[in-house]
Length: 360
Image (cartoon, rainbow, N blue to C red; front, side, top):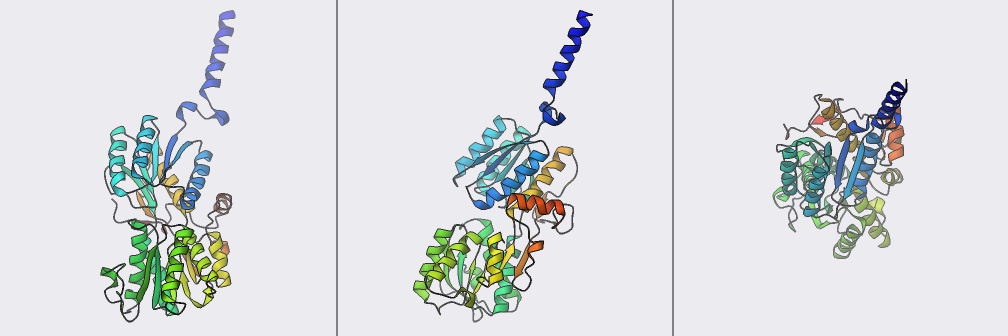
């Protein structure tokens, strides 16, 4: 009897130690290594939603935030591999660095997924979720054409990143596809004096995706051109638009008299467009992007087929088309609440999430 009792106690202890809270086996808890190239609010918003979804699924997420250098990304991925994580998510520093990381992850048998910036299409890449940045810029170009803007201040994001280059290309194509004369702009990006009779980029600058550098660019543009030397500005994200608006307001300019277009569609931009401070924006959210990556990883773990590379859906808006009920939030709790209510489409299998043809 005593031996039977001891055996029963041992069995109970095995069960107790073999399961985590909520009945999940500790040995089967998935661990995700998540790397972000910088402490950018865009990256953080995506991470917050990814972690919320991962936590609901019973996963553990190890996050590392770099300071925009290639060695940090490489070191983080190497460390994730050493820790034997089940999957890696990367918001990359550069395609060249990612190429090294993919080789390491593949050799270790760990799937690597990417967000936002286009990674190289190489063996080891298990998934990519990002936006069609060219079309994003094209939507802004279409709006500027409709407004009649011809002299544009261009404030790009981080020079050298495909996201910024894609938006610039798309903006110029928006004019070209509308049959407008843009001269040699598409082959002379950033060259002073390039352009045609329907579009001239009168001032080029990079704000690095942040408000203060963008404010300085706009201040320099206003000083150089004067208030009548431009009739619009394409500022490629909402943080840079914050700086650009400050510069214009401090110079005593009525921002409502200029065509002002941006991208991101953060909550504050809804108010800008509604009140006429800016002309248009694109609700292009890292929260939804990270949700798609979560779904890719979920399918990968389950051994199910999934769209490997996805153009995440976005929504352009101006004052006439703005419907706040349909907007995808950047704030995690608001995102999760609207997601649960089915206020926007988030299922990767929905047709609005197109496959990126550059990845097979």
